[in-house]
Length: 247
Image (spheres, rainbow, N blue to C red):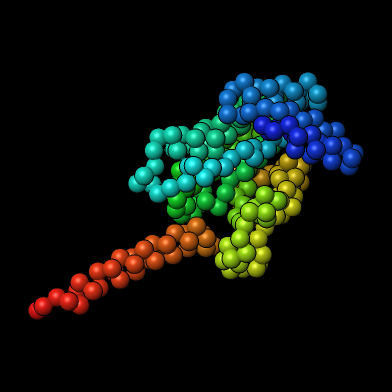
């Protein structure tokens, strides 16, 4: 069962899954609302009879919601936190209610949930909330034989990123990764498969980082770089005044 807001990529992915011999159904739905979540649950139950694994992969922060915390307005906060935390929780809740014979819930978090996230602080806060909820849901729902785990990717490159990213940006990001490359979706997907499978039957309440060994938040480095340049410019502008002072 695949769900998203845009039909064409959903159908293409479902067709690719069918070509590999899997049963795949695409449901065009918006999970930022109970009706959208319920539509996915109902479609899954109608087609397969039950839900035994659920992946929450909806989450982002648009360019319009990027900015320093001092200037963040209520709309920027709500859009990001609602998508990444509020509706992730209610999707988990709906999935758990449908898992009458147990199952596995996998939340896609971000390393921003455990590291500073300058210019998108509300996104980092939301992902930290997802990781906290993951642990709490694992405790509350464990007796129902529902496992809940999270994956926290680092710098993962997508087709869209490849087309838009400057070479200089790519090099700067790679320099923060010990494995000397950016991640790809194929680095994340197998871990989700593991959490969904019986091989992880005694694993619950965990958050696994997929960062290539990176412990350096590239957003922090970029932010501090701009702060340093701004402070240097301010000092340079004041320097002639100081040099001309008469003591």
